[in-house]
Image (cartoon, rainbow, N blue to C red; front, top):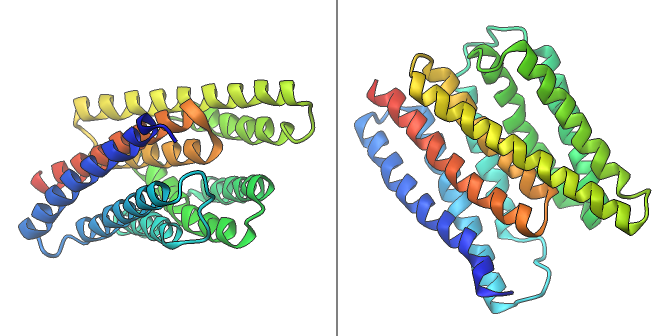
Length: 260
């Protein structure tokens, strides 16, 4: 692996350390802030995953990583971030049944794709459960905070279905056409990242809906992780950089809420 390919991971490690230091100060400011506590757990788990992956790849380059500690750390991060959102939800105060069902179906479709790509049933299913927990509460939080309009919800549903369909088609067409579908998928995922980044920045600028600010920052993270799992090469590395940005945005959104 060329040295430049380690850059996104190194950037993320630096961001994670900065965020952990800031989040710990949030806890010192308010020891009963359960969201900040779960958030620190999540970020520490991501940091451990990154360090483990980096050490493994340096020691054993070009060899496939077995079922290992980094997988468990990823599950812990998704569940902890889901717990942050769950603690912020007011007892299912809105009807988000359609969104919750859609999140479950989307994760199941993703798990099927991961298994088809890797053949690693156990870790793919476990990752699906952990990511599904995050997406389940993210859908409720997005709906309750009114972060997305009806049109945006419809577009999100269509785009998610298109992503699953395009990835599925790669198993049934020749290599050249499969590469085309991969490129289309990558561009759709990248467009989604740009959209959520723009949405989060606009919400930060307006500053009128703290809950939406949190929702959209977490949505950007979830989208970037989904993009990483669906991508390779340049699209993967771009998505990892976006995930680092989303981690910082999640931290800032929670910090702004604490500071009022």
